[in-house]
Length: 124
Image 1 (tube, rainbow, N blue to C red):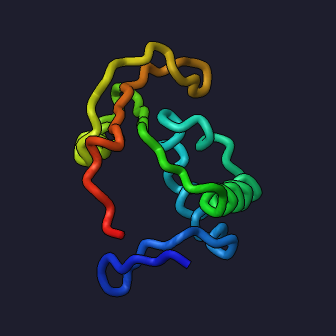
Image 2 (cartoon, rainbow, N blue to C red):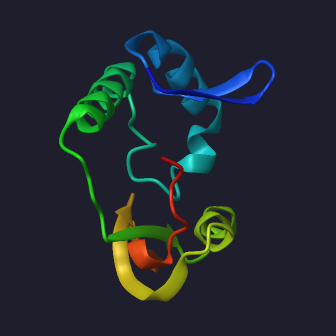
Image 3 (spheres, helix red, strand yellow):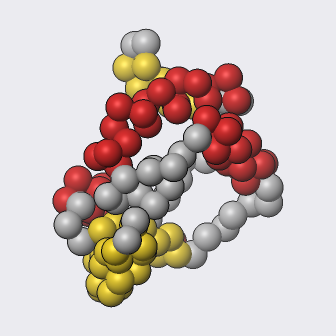
């Protein structure tokens, strides 16, 4: 299983079904903060969290991805989320008008992308 130490005792690793309780507990106190930006946040149930973990594990065990382009979208007004692709060297490519429905309204999103030729080579 993939695991990478960050700082003692913290590590980055794949989610396991056993993490569902803790992951869902992280959503609950911040639900009102997350919901304006993430369509899933308002109604995310514990069962949805378990299903999300299962889907990510299946996705990771599927075929080699050999991607040429990776895109990240973030709401225009969500400066904290926009800072992530900017920090990672993604290029801002434009604004997608009314790209995502959150509750009863639509948010514009900023599209960021990076190409394989622009990404630093991976250690192999």
